[in-house]
Image (spheres, rainbow, N blue to C red):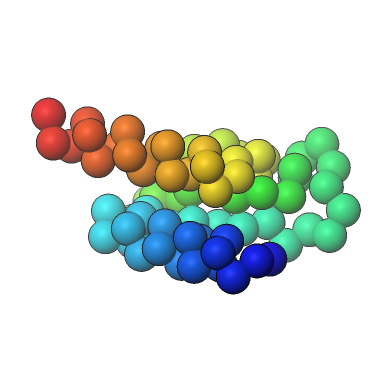
Length: 75
């Protein structure tokens, strides 16, 4: 992982944690149908999947979700 990606992931984790959401990264080495090797977002209180259940998001998708989430909260 590039240092830019690591910093970006850390920043996204921080912003998600403020909303009581957790960023989970897949630990699988070889992606398959049930685990595509990316990220998903989990609710911190209820421990249920908020965004995708098969680790199919990348950091761009997570950032887009977070921007939409913050915008919906401000409305």
